[in-house]
Image (tube, one colour):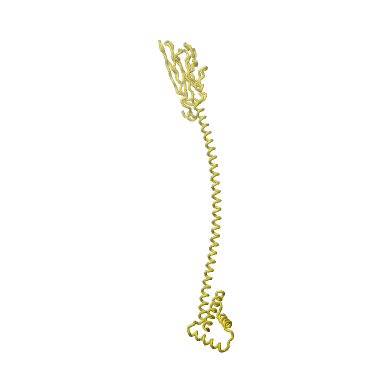
Length: 307
């Protein structure tokens, strides 16, 4: 019975010491005092005989192999101290991880904010791109419209230019009937009254004069017809200057001649045909005497000067 009491006392003391080590630790004096206190509670004042018997029993049980309580407590204290160190290290590790988690959370929040800003920037850029595309479409449509108008204007200008280049005429001497013209005592300008063609209205059948409406190179031709016994001679004139002559003489029967020339004319230059004095030509419904001309091609100012 006394041995059981001793064992229970040791177990209770061990549990208390362990609890105190966890709560903050006890030194050896405190442990001894605690043991004494426990002895007081477990063993009320006894007689000297009981104490002697307990001491004898305790000594007997200690001799049987019960370990030294102080050595056990020291070992337990060392273990608890080591565990407290481990707990402190674990606590520091947990604190460090919490700090890292806070930093990571801050970083994630910052990245989310950056992503929101980037998304806003991308959205703004898309809006700018759409606005730019719309402006480019408007400009392209405007340019296309301008080019279309320009093209239409150019076509109209080319048409007008082509119309200006459509210059050609041909006329016969007599409008109707038959007969002689000449001889005269002076040279005269012939009026070819029967107009076959007068594109551009540059030839005047009343005066017999062609007036150049466009600067360029022109081709002119004349033909004459007469009866034998009288010479037939006519000349092409440019601005009063003799250019070429068509001439024939035959003592008997019919005579005819023709000639042509290319002239470079300025706007307003005149070309006409003159019958020489003393000469005579004949014409009838067959239009034996003709005066014709047409524009070969227009010339720029520098080209005309170079020629």
